[in-house]
Image (cartoon, rainbow, N blue to C red):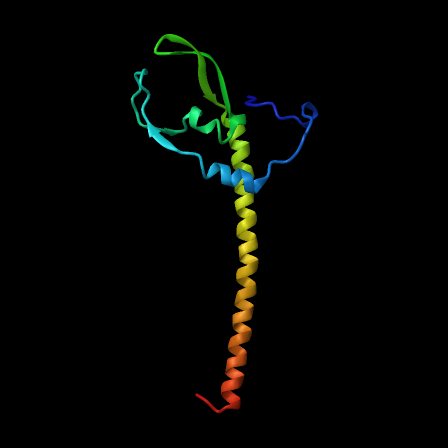
Length: 130
């Protein structure tokens, strides 16, 4: 079964997604718990509201004709979760890069601390302090 076409031969790559911008954008996305108004299934769900997502990740939202409670509307909003997933992966990669950079900084600070402790120990010895 094929879910989504993704063959490189079908794509003209125009650039990479900025991981930092993706992370900042996703931090603005409001995740909600909701129940459908006009469907029999009233179980609580977790998701997004397309109209709220549009100004943040417009590529993941489409508006077209649809029906709300049987009434035809010209601006029914859909979330393209494939687009959102790819955007989320970019954000996760950006977050991972930040964690790796912070780990390098932590390791450098640990080394500095160890060197400072060694210097303090040497000073204590030379001053014959406990």
